[in-house]
Image (cartoon, rainbow, N blue to C red; front, top):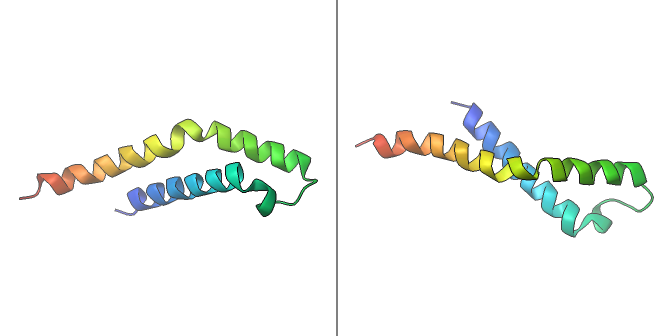
Length: 70
């Protein structure tokens, strides 16, 4: 199945982008992008409760079939 790998990849990408925006934002995006900066910070805050739980749910779904094998 392809969708679990895609979902986990998107979650990992969102976590990386969150850390870049939160810790290194001044280096990645030049100053003076007020609305873009506000939009990005709003988006990353809105996705915060979804990123890691979705990753672990998808990983758990895949792991159950691996654990059930002899």
